[in-house]
Amino acid sequence: MASFSLVHQLQLQYSPFEDRLILSTHGHDARTIRLLITRRLALPLFERLLSLSQEANYWDEPLATQAPSAALDSQQAKHATQASARLEHETEHPAESATSALDDALAQMYLATQVHFEQQGEHLAVAFEGLVLPDAMQQPQPHVPVFAFQLNGADLHKITHLFNREMERARWNESHALAPQFNTSALQ
Image (cartoon, rainbow, N blue to C red; front, side):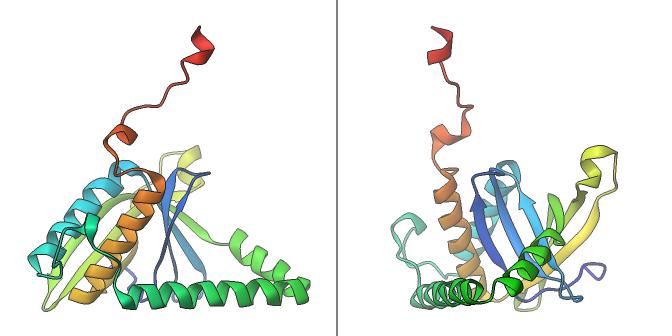
């Protein structure tokens, strides 16, 4: 996994607008990288993370009934506090807010196409390949290495929880969510 840029902080959220999970990080050049993950890739990825996490014995009970770990809760509280402080700061300093919006516009976007797993001692390396957006929407593009991250057992547990939480928000973990949704009222 030498050709993949190794990142250390990740943020995962579901975007109803894109109907994708968005895995965000910062590259070595401090530029934001956003990786869009489709349901088609997210489901087997989650199943693999869950299986590996269970093999590592980080689950005392099934994920569906397990409350998030205290560390995850405290991290979410920290992010909520930071988001609140950022919103307050942006209200007081609108010029800096415009710079933040520009940073978002300059973010490099990828569509995830492949996930690679590699055991590296006590760590699990997870690497993503993808297509550069919007270029790949306009003409054929090669799949490129996007980034990789390493997980120890506790990190594997946390990221599995994050994927589960966001897939619940997307309703992707419900069996009927896999079937196409049709509006039949227009047909009558």
